[in-house]
Image 1: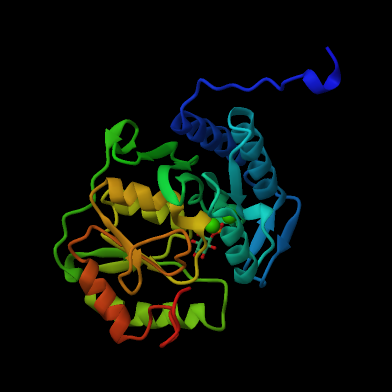
Image 2: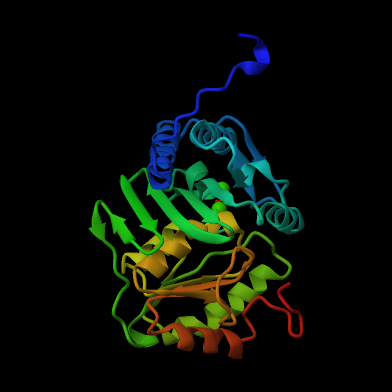
Length: 293
Ligand code: IPD
Ligand code: CA
Ligand code: CA
């Protein structure tokens, strides 16, 4: 047989979800085993925007595994994209028409990881023609695997997840994050924080957007919002929240799509009140009169 007739061996029998779980579990175990051993700490767009050799190694591991099963699929992974919002918008634009697109954040919560604060996760989503059909988030420190399949529900440890039942903001526990862009995103988030904090039970900033989304899905948080995210931070979490009976929009109430950077996720019941307060505080992350496109 000559060289060009050799067909690479491709494993085809696994479901997308099984592959996503396998990737998240393997990468998560490896990340955990390297906790406290980081050797190369670099910054990206600002002094707060960190990346390590473990982020890069985990993404390589996930890419290889996905391509072993699905060599024709496209992958949008954080560490494969130049830093900065412009580059990530371009990368998403280039990838979004791929029929099958895997969206990967190898460590969501790198700052926590570097400091040994045990709240970080691996986030993997699969979109088919722009629609998220699988979402998996793995927290290796608690060994919690959150799984969602479009139309089939969401689960943690095999148990269905369900959003919480709070009906009012005053009974709600929210979360947010503190974006690394100090010029626009951070002041916007701070304005939202200041407006919401007196009106809710409390607000947490755990440092992993993906886990915040998973916690909304699991009813541990009533809602979550953040300005200035990327698709890999939230794509898996979006499906988890939706499949758990919750609501996800941008911070001005438009339906989620992969290009949304300013996100609001909730149990549904408090969603409009959350959006109204962000709007009144001019804290939606959208400069007035500027469209999202
Ligand atoms: C970050 C985390 C954090 C959020 C930041 C994200 P990374 O992701 O999700 O919670 O506040 O906006 O960039 O950089 O650790 O993958
Ligand atoms: Ca992230
Ligand atoms: Ca990351």
